[in-house]
Image (cartoon, rainbow, N blue to C red; front, side, top):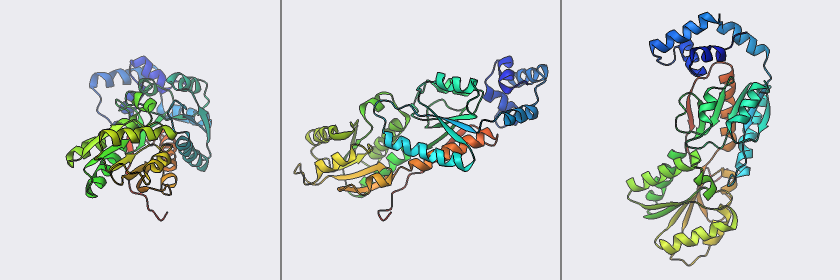
Length: 325
């Protein structure tokens, strides 16, 4: 049975380009369209027959690539996995966890017919996997928003908007000097997408609001207190911290409680609400709905497998958590 991958190879284009030619959802040059249609004719390719063949060979398994790399918050990753698992089970699918951190592991699972599609976590701004994923014979969905992902489906929390929301809230509360204590140094060094976008949104909105703002990586655990000390020593007029590091948050809050470093310092957290709302000293929380994010990613992948979801980004808008929850 001739597949869409065979047509793409014969025409010298990506699988997504063949899909666009068939669906008409995106403008394709006439020369490329002619090559694809010629390859389809030469190979006697029938989209309907191919779809029936793929359906008959369905594994009812979704791959989920969740590499546990340095600095990754495993608790939040497992919340995302739990959300994806619940959504998959609701549609009678299982999850196969892939722990590799490159495209080769995903390609092996696809070639072996182990999964119907794959979810990709821990996405970098310039992710080296993007090009290979666009050429896979199975659908891929990224839980993250890299650059140059026009041919892929992406689902993520809107971290850039969350950064803007935090800066606006702190400005409204009268703060003039603020700091973002973000992901661990290893995560920022990899330019993980969410870290870059959060920082960009926070610093841009702080500048627009007339705030003096800085952004620093923050190690998880007790080491976070050293970053707090650094901020207060270098910028003693700092009156608010925006913290996006769930594992560091309790240590930061404990360090600031009762501190005599020039007055009280407000803490605004970006975190799954249940991890941050009850930390003493945290005044407000922008909820990071990790389980919802995993569920949305799994649903997008199921739709892509079913042919009802095309390339594009779906972003979950940030909101403040309800303290009563």
